[in-house]
Length: 132
Ligand code: ZN
Image (cartoon, rainbow, N blue to C red):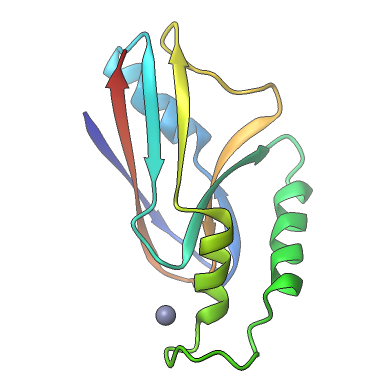
């Protein structure tokens, strides 16, 4: 089964929580046990799992990435968004989660985040569920 979460991002750099969207997909699927693959088919974004209880955590992650990978450096890529591509490589484009008893296995404080590094843009996140 394949599902797509459509997102409109608003800033150059931001993290958008998609935990509830993924949970809805899993409950509609009626899969009790299996894997959930979350994949972003974009070169300037990422998928992360981290604390959702305190929104400052993802803000700190984003601010750290901004310092680690500055926008204005001598990059070769002519589009002018190499910083976004590099951040995408650091965070990665997908995560695989476990489904048990019809629910995502997530820690108490964990949430799933789409990370935008070159917004605002229209983005699609693919969610693929496998029974097993
Ligand atoms: Zn580019």
